[in-house]
Image 1: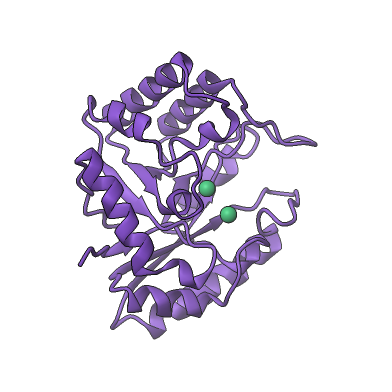
Image 2: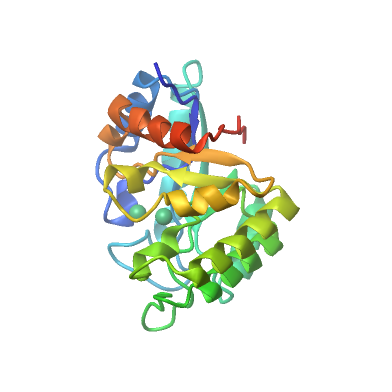
Length: 247
Ligand SMILES: [Zn+2]
Ligand SMILES: [Zn+2]
């Protein structure tokens, strides 16, 4: 049977578009045989609210407390960590660096869903080179444990084109140089999104990069064997091995 022993990409209902109790995620992960579970809900924007997308800053303490309680309660069955999935946004990056330094969280993963955030979200659309340069910029900051869905930019692209390949090469080069792993995103498989992209992962094999699987759970039942099997089919087709990541 195909098995995953860790998953560091788990959301909670605080983001406003995930459902279920924190504990239900833990129970489902244990049932699936996961040994190391990381919560990485969408990070808050300091001083700003983005309803339905992420928790507010005043919910952070409750989030950390809840996960720490579960860590203690289930410590004999599963090793629980807590962090965030964060965009690399220059306006917030210093606060995120401080958060990592504070020791309150165990890790950050990069989820570059958009570039700037002012009054409205700036999504990349066809400007995939800018996406790649932002991911490269994020990597250079040195606070991200891995890159979630490095192919997320494909949501804004009508058709794979030569700029997509250029963008992928920029990202892979940066990942190779820094030893930053990239994620094969199981939510993308589950929802038939344009990612994970075979084109991207084929190119990635020309580089010395490491791979992780991320469930990207938004409901407890996202921890299920059927999705794991589909992810392993993807891995097999591309002849990709998964890194044994331990945070
Ligand atoms: Zn989400
Ligand atoms: Zn994401």
